[in-house]
Image (tube, rainbow, N blue to C red; front, side):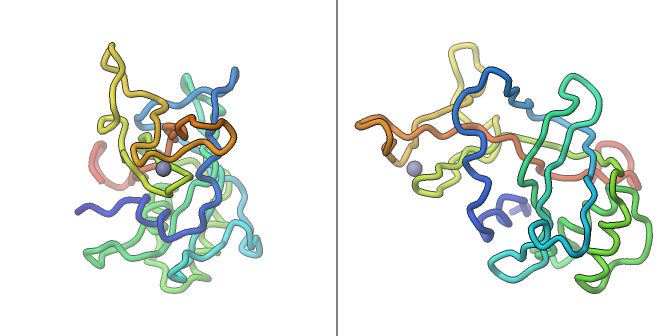
Length: 199
Ligand SMILES: [Zn+2]
């Protein structure tokens, strides 16, 4: 099975999973696709940005902001990349991120290497694929990892909210099912060092 950023989320604190709750008049849910993002300034000393995974791997949490196009300025908050190794042992998502940001140096060997490189790449841009994920904050279960997997409306479009399939109830509205909202997520950063469309 292919590694996913979601696996890393599941090994992480729950912070950030309910940030897209509820409809808003201004919020635009960025459709799945490939977008250009900007990396903010992240200091090595920023302990909020550098919070380890539950398993103790170095993990970067930041707000990725779309640059250009129809969704310019939209934010993907609580974007996370960690050094948890891929299941094939070759690399990790934080390593993919620094390559996508244009880092072409030697493979980082220590956590401090990664932190120093990320700090040096402030305000650089990178491309990443995105998709929607549906996770219930009640039972902490991810039901659909892509918009393609999600239930569709009558026009064939993926629903942006579904009732929790596990039957969770909304504590604030008696008897009502708990809503699970489609949450846009970065799924895989794109390396500029390989042919377009490949990873
Ligand atoms: Zn649930």
